[in-house]
Length: 189
Image 1 (tube, rainbow, N blue to C red):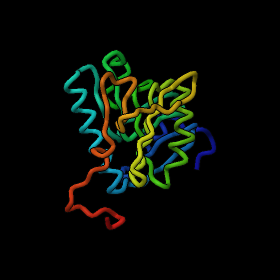
Image 2: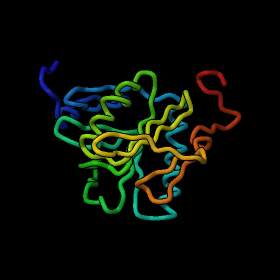
Image 3: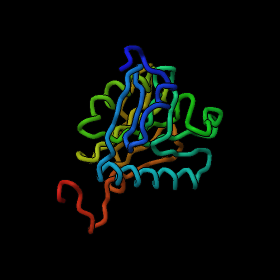
Image 4: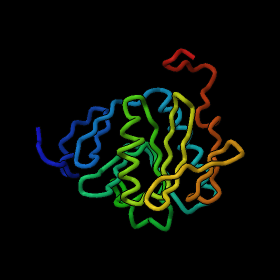
């Protein structure tokens, strides 16, 4: 049991057990395997964003596990992240070194406080321009843009989630949370 802030080298000793290991503010955060709803929203968003970027060019989307090194004591694995072509120098073979253009966290009851408070503060501190919080249980997407060091909600009148940093990208929450009729999620619905 280490009594010091953790750094990237400390992650190398973590077991390969299907859990996600991150360092937030020097503290180890361990997340269990994601739920079916989480995976469904993640897969749908990945497809929608990848399709948009494929049509427009100029960026890549990555899914966890993919390290984002923001500082020596902040190594996170967002559920999804986008790096635009202009920030290509941040890409490494094993992750991103610097602030992605868009970070998306898909919350669970266990991760909600970390994602909404601690990670939001870290992402703002390191200049991530856009941060989305996806709640598959509530079927909501909170898109936020960094303004003067704090995240402000992005709103629209058409029911779609519009990115401010990924040009022309608008996501329909209905598509993000859609499941095939034959699937039964953990709530039995």
